[in-house]
Amino acid sequence: MRSKILATGSNLPAKILTNADLEKLVETSDEWIVSRSGIRERRIVESADTASSLSLPAAKTALSRANLNPGDLDAIIVATITPDMAFPSTACLMQNMLGCRQIPCFDISAGCTGFVYAMKIADAMITTGQYRNILVVGVELLTKITDWTDRSTCVLFGDGAGAAILAPTDDDTGLLGSYWSADGSFAPLLEMPAGGSRMPASEKTVKENLHTVKMLGNETFKAAVRAMEEASLEGIKSAGLEKADIDWLIPHQANIRIIEFTAKRLGISMDKVIITLEKYGNTSAASVPIALDEAMTSGKIKSGDNVLLVAFGAGFTWGSIVFKA
Ligand code: ACO
Image (cartoon, rainbow, N blue to C red; front, top):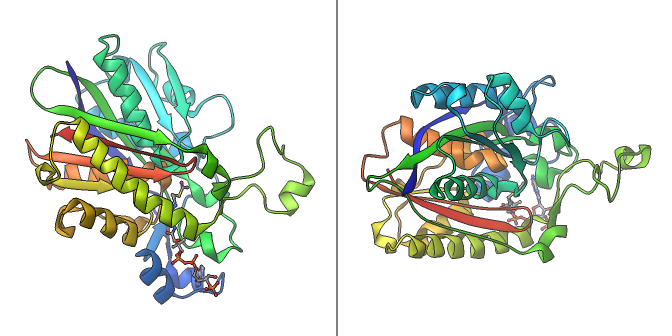
């Protein structure tokens, strides 16, 4: 038995923050941001928005496209580093908002690799035969943990949510292979230092802006390039495929240069790569499901196509999913 993606959905905030807007906030330029990252604009939430409220429309769209009701769900997994709060999980809050039965609901934290990790967990739960319909969400409100005085990070991030419903299938479509890995020795390169048990919130942590993303961009870039290639090749191998068999590459949308490098190493031309970062920036765990949803609903991905999802993020974590549409 395999698991397959029955349907997807996504939700982006309406408010757009352009590179020109950022030029007014920090010493930067549209030219620098576009040439170094490929990002032109990003979406940002309103202050009342939360991970669950942003995810809800994405989840409802995915459910309705899958012809399922919330009561048909057997589990909810939410991948996020910006949950509504430290606990309870955003997945439990969504279960209540959707009006689901009493089912297992939990969040996972794997940075930008979160959605790929969550898909791998859902696939394992389904292929053991214990669960049928699983809602997998990737959501991030990174602009709520952005240091707007730090030009090296504030130009990169955006907000959004993406969702997919996984269910069992016995035909030849669905998840063919996957890969995941992590290396915690890189943890200090990309982190939010305060707000956990190491450095609980205090006047000092707020004053020092420690409740925001800190990233050593260049070191992270080098590790990302290596890990995206490794995750892609391992995922393709575990699917029993060759590089040439991949019809579509849907990479994490952090930097166009990382994406171009990954595509080149795989021998995939850029017209077979789904790119959303120009308009949405880096939405962390939401970036792969948003791009996946756009690729599925635009009709780019055709029945029988082999699709590679690949991501890299805080931890460091990295991973991939290969599926036949
Ligand atoms: N505008 C203008 N200049 C800037 C800006 C800016 N916004 N930001 C940095 N600079 C300057 C730096 O100060 C530096 O100046 P210096 O040479 O005088 O010291 C110069 O530009 C080059 O800086 P680098 O950091 O070396 O630039 P780089 O080419 O590495 O690009 C970037 C930076 C875009 C952040 C890149 O390193 C990157 O994409 N890193 C990986 C991001 C990633 O994949 N993250 C993982 C996922 S995120 C997650 O999990 C939440």
